[in-house]
Amino acid sequence: QVQLVESGGELVQAGGSLRLSCAASGGTFSSYRLGWFRQAPGKEREFVATINRNGGNLYYADSVKGRSTISRDNAKKMVYLQMNSLKPEDTAVYYCAARRFTTTRTMGNMPDDYDYWGQGTQVTVSS
Image (cartoon, rainbow, N blue to C red):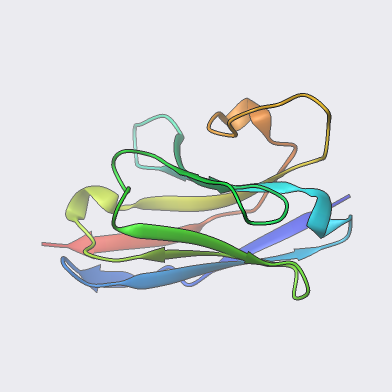
């Protein structure tokens, strides 16, 4: 079983930056695909970014591409989301997620792709 704990969310002004962190415990972290999702009030959970096991393959939602960077540190069992040029529409609860290794290939951009979820961290961007 894997536990994921996000941190780093806060209130920030538009145009600012944040780095979200997600600490993992349990499981074999280096074997997991990792992802970030977000959910705004009244909206569906949406994909933000994903990174494969060795960090060599990254994929972003169009809404954050060019403004965000996902990264991981397998030694520390951490995954990060650096977000720049934040906009009010980035306001949401941000979740990290982990997918156990399987031979089934996936882009990792759907919530159902993932087996484990954190509790979320609130990001609020004021205009």
